[in-house]
Amino acid sequence: MESGDMKEIILMFHVLFGVGCIITAVWLFVDVLHASEAHLGRIRKLSVVLAMFMWLAFLIGGYWYVRLYPADKAIILKGPWPFAHNFFMETKEHLVIMLLLLASFLPIAAANNLAANPAARRLVLWTTAGIALLGLMVEGHGAIIAMGVKVALLAGQH
Amino acid sequence: MDDTTLSKYTISFGLSLALCSVLNALLVVLKETSRTVVAELQKTTGHQWVTHVAIVLVLFALLGWLFSLANHGQGLKLPAGRLTGIVVAGVVAGGLIITAFYLFAG
Image (cartoon, rainbow over all chains, first blue to last red):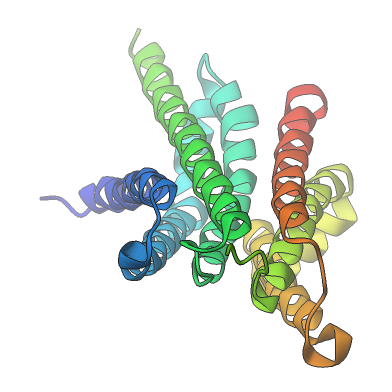
């Protein structure tokens, strides 16, 4: 393995924890739909796991964005898909901040008695749905950014 | 009988989340339209995005904590059903401002 591969490995961990966050959000959504006293412990633990996944994805992605992305950005902007940076990366880097806030808020909301409190249950359902949808959206943005690099490199070969 | 009350931290940090989502979006508009602002953000931590994130996270923690101190430490009062609407409205508004800005003005 070459040292240059670390860039891709870091990026893969960013995506891995992001996907973990989305899967946990969907799992939690279903669990909260059927919330009972017996499930409350698992729901609370899962909400903390989700927040940890999100923070890991964010910190790794943040490191990659600040330290390693400028090279990719230069390639994208010279290629046929400059919107991969100008729209998709620019929106992604700011939408993920809201995703981080939602994930950080989730364990606080999940600490209520979801089995006996329909308002708290509704709040957690909306929060997990927001995390899953926003998470899928930024994963899609990430795919388009990666594609922006690929089409630029391919265009440069011809 | 159903419990319909939310903990003071749920209300406080839920309101803070909604508010910070909108503030995050407004900071995007501000820094993208003002070179002075982006230069200040850049100068503070060495990267404008890192400072942007730090501001939003500190505000989220600070506002959540301050809201929980209101009413002599009992926290802000809000009908339980309204908080969900406020959180959803804040996140949707923040997302729309950011997307619309880069789509039409970015």
